[in-house]
Length: 79
Image 1 (cartoon, rainbow, N blue to C red):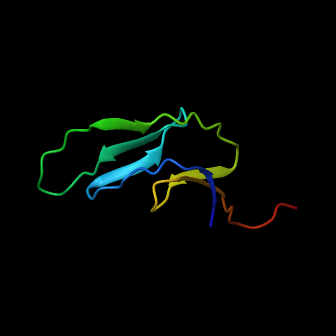
Image 2: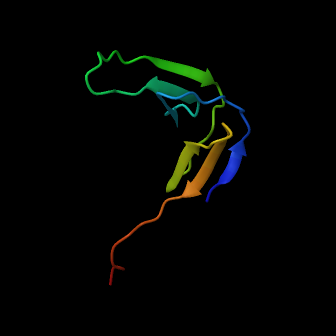
């Protein structure tokens, strides 16, 4: 698992996708559902300004905190 970078305490709701955007802020977008009209609506919830590192994955966990995990790279080792 990853380590907590910043405690934001964002309350998560059903039907929304939570992520860390390019600027390092916590944002959400409504999920597309089959048979329902879709209008993309992006909302920035918390302006964190996190500096992203190469090879790391950033996500919002259950508690609403921003976490960082090292990305796993598969495949064979190069000779």
